[in-house]
Each structure stands twice: as structure tokens, then as C-alpha cells.
Length: 173
Ligand code: S3P
Image 1: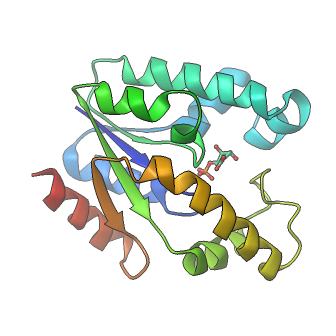
Image 2 (image 1 turned 60 degrees about the vertical axis):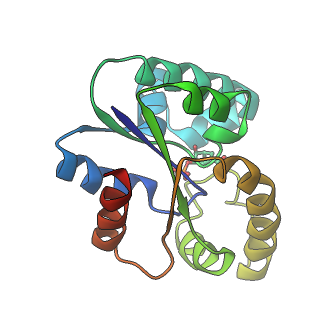
């Protein structure tokens, strides 16, 4: 079985994924980390030296490698992963994959991302919280079309990581 966490940057895919994997006794995988080790460079460097299109192609290839393994995994995707090519369609068609959308509001995502935007090339240039908020509102609206296709949806705004993990476990039963 593969539990695939999707959602906007800052929605907690990696921290929630790690705890969920521990609870299920599955292996945790992080797509950005897998791309970084395959490229020998971090996401910011890949974006600046090779461009976003290169990153998206690599993201697609590494995702396919990860979901083709026979291992039980919890996979934290990148915020853009399900929004390019036919990724969402592919994930929904794989019998052993369950997609989970970690749904955050624009306000909560803005607060979180303002503190950690430097390592995210798509938003690192946005100087003020207002600019970041405007960007996220529009971007999340566009991406929600893909995120909302996930099999399960969990709200992240008012819950702790433990609470979100419990909510996912309950929905998986
Ligand atoms: C991206 C999200 C990032 C990373 C890259 C692009 C996006 O992952 O893949 O910076 O397009 O939303 P996180 O969602 O883990 O920040």
C-alpha cells in the first residue's frame, strides 16, 4: 500500500507523513529529498541552475520510481507534484495508492510559509506577508482543482500533527 500526501507548500506533508509512517510501520519517503539525492543538489539550486521545467520532469520520473516499488510507503509529495502532467490521474488509477489531501486555509498557509519561504523558490522573492497572501490565494485556487481529486481530505488548520495523523488513520480504516 502507498499513502500519498498531497497539498500546498506548508501543509505539513513531511512532518505528518513521518508520523503516519511510524504509526503504520511503513517506510517514509519524501519526494523533494529523493529528487535532491538523485540530482546531488537542493531544490533551490535545481530551480536556479536548471529551471522549473527540468525540476518538474525530474519530479515526475522520481515519483514514478517511488510508486513502482513493492514497499509499503507513506510519500510526502511536493506542493506542485499532482498539478503537472497526468500525475493525479496516474495516482488515482494505481490500485495500491491512496491519495490524501492535507487542506490548509490561505491564512494558515501564509503564516507558516512567511517564516520558511527562503527554501522555496516559488515564493522566496515575495517580500511582505500581504504579497505572499495574494500569491497563495491565487495559486491555491488554481491548484485546488487537482488537490480536491484526492481520495481523502483532512483539514489541517486547527489540529496538531498527532490529531491529523489520527484523522487520517480513521479515514484509512
Ligand atoms: C513546490 C513545492 C516544494 C518543492 C518545490 C516546488 C511547489 O515542496 O517541491 O519548491 O510547486 O509547490 P513542498 O510542498 O514540500 O514545499
